[in-house]
Image 1: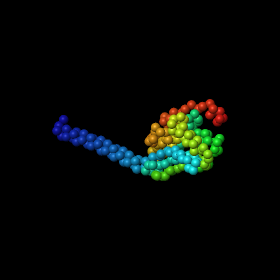
Image 2: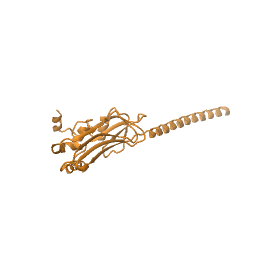
Image 3: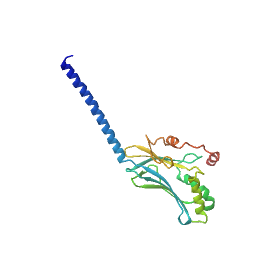
Image 4: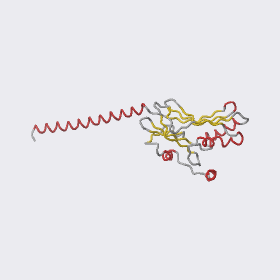
Length: 215
């Protein structure tokens, strides 16, 4: 091989290397830009149980707040109550948490609620999915706080809420009220939320008494 051919081959090899490097740089820049775009519109939903005892009464509320930097498009949600079928009824969750233990003595609370599925929550906004309030009564504050404490100290297993939502770029996450998973979990989509929830909190067996009451 002559010197001219060697030079031409060297130039060709350098051109190929330069092309590969250019492609890699372009791919890396696109990846960085994509990550930056994702961060610029990343919604972060925080799920909060709130309880208080105003004027000797009792108040329970469940809020979904967007603490991120972009709108959250609520695609689906699910409530997992120990020993029961999964549900989307916040009323049923409140009954499990509070109402079942107070109803006989203090009656049913006054409910207020807002729809969650299909909603868009802007940055800094929140949705109160449900509120349940009992007016002041003798012994209510004590019994209400006792019911709440039974979940805080582990005597009873709490119900957990899972909300699947997406950003305007169609990146999706699941936020949960479960204490061990405070950060949203990134998912491919919200189409199989029950399967995703099974990976986070395994379903407890449905108790026979619950099945009978639902039949």
